[in-house]
Length: 225
Length: 104
Image (cartoon, rainbow over all chains, first blue to last red; front, top):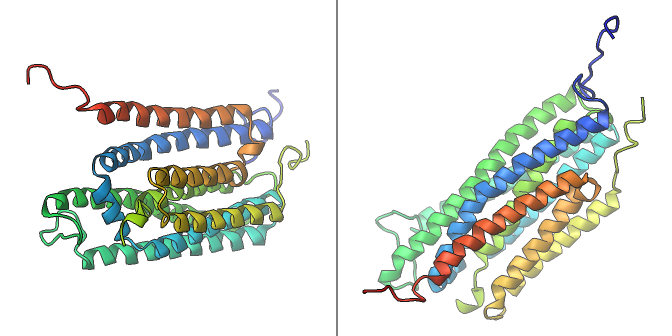
């Protein structure tokens, strides 16, 4: 062994026996990180569950004040971005250099649209005086003693959508890095781990939104006319 | 050196398009059904559809159906801990006030 200089590549680092072993280790490591993310968001989902079970009526009214059509369309945009992301991973698996860049840029575009719509929705909340802690906070249809519970809903709304959007912003940074690397031809059919694990991250953030959308926008809409 | 694509399962574009369409339809259904009075089942239906969407994204977009058993175990373990977090929290909050406080 001593007379052989170690030949290390991106696809096969010296500490791994085979490329497949290295790839499996990367995937497993990313999933373990995502499990910590499940627990991170899990705390907020627990808060949501407790307060919704305590104040179901106020939560239904507050939820119905959100525009569910915008929310549904934005969900569609995010699902589209997940589709283009998985297509970028597929292009890497096939070693199609140009297609990787194109699909990553499309993912960035859809992610950007989602964040833009989210910013518009948050701004609407400011205009409607639905910001928790605001002196002028008022939600129509809720008794004066229920206004505090309505503020709770919007606190949870901003905390959960805010943490989700923060993850999207980080995802945008990751995508920009990947686009630069992909343009330099860094990825090939034998090595595309960064695209692969970034894809896992992006889809995870998508799954969080898949739950946030019905839980925040669609509570008992039939009760509120 | 073995062929790098030998151990990689590459799904067809058609598969991904079908999954995307299923996800978009499910989003439409969950939005529409929220206006229907299902009583206490509203939240069950909403979470059921969301869970189905999660399974589709995880199996196909996140390649769980091609992944190793160890990775699948880690994913299920994560969901198990989330279930413990939610269920044990609710055993407290949902049962408060069922029994009176002695001496009060």
